[in-house]
Length: 89
Image (cartoon, rainbow, N blue to C red):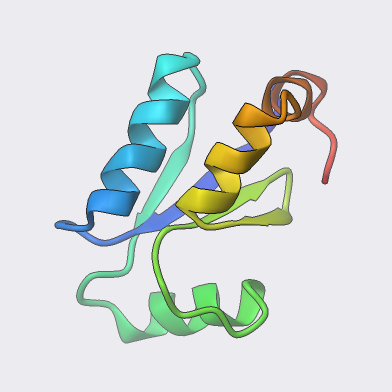
């Protein structure tokens, strides 16, 4: 199984939706809350190519994008393969 990291904030509906999608697939993920941590948010922004919005999702270190990007991968039938194979995008 791939390593999944998701940067979130506490009250973000898109973060909730992304977590729900991953949990519905029984995917374990590391959640990194950047709500009140400027250093973590800066690290996220650097890893995400300057994107500052949450969530920012990574699979095996590869930047997937936000919730809309995750949903688009799922709808295209590509997400399960990424999660199972443990390979980057």
